Amino acid sequence: MYARLLVLRTGLRHFQRWSEQQAKAAGLTPAQHQLLLAIRGHTDPRGPTVGEVADYLLLRHHSVVGLIDRADEAGLVQRSRDAMDQRVVRLHLTDEGAERLEGLSAQHLEELERLATQLPWEGLGPVQATHGFSGPAPSKAAVRHVDVVNVYEAPEPGSAVRVLVDRLWPRGLPRSGASFDQWMKDVAPSADLRKWYGHRSGRFPEFSERYRAELAQPSARECVGELRHLAEDAGLLLLTATKDLALSHAIVLNEVIMGE
Image (cartoon, rainbow, N blue to C red; front, top):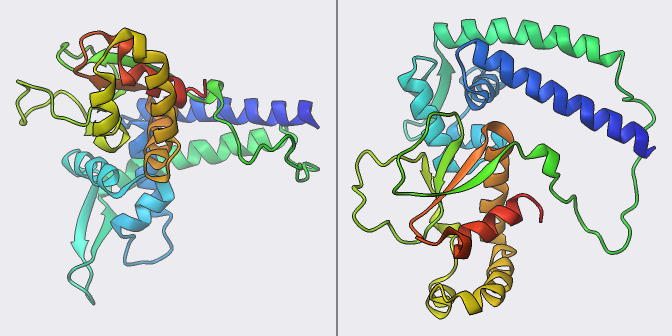
């Protein structure tokens, strides 16, 4: 059973990597490809709402809004007001977005037909959890890349998503034109923990344990899940203003995302 699960999971990972490469060849990021598919695959002819797309992509609302904004600027999607309720925004593909998705979808269907004859889909029944394990641990193989970078460093070329994970805005950094994609301050240590720690090296081991306990709380756990999703999709850079990265909370967060 475990050998078959390994073959299946490995095959799915290869398919995901292949899918990402096809999306990039079509001029899309993997996240944009998922967005176009979520919009086109929605069964309501009026188009999905932002909230419905967030559910499809397992992302929070503000993250999806940013993704939609970039796709809108690229001419891939457009927004419209619901005819029955002007407060509701619906999403649709532009002709350009629909054309790119159509070509990708044909390629993906062909690849799935090929994989259907190779992967052990049948006969994999439910497995009982043991030793008190209550949920799937994150797979290091599934996380493409996570790194910690000082927010003041000039960004290097690459497709990795850049996320600021400090609770406070970096001192001296202008609000406009910031060189990162998201600011996820809810995943940072609490004010009390940050003040107690004070970046004193002797307290780092205990700080790490306390911070991990905070990350296990529901609100922070949701943020960690979103960061892991970003890491799996395009790679992830955790940005912090901390000078000594080795003593930064971002190092601990990196380990949690990687399942360490």
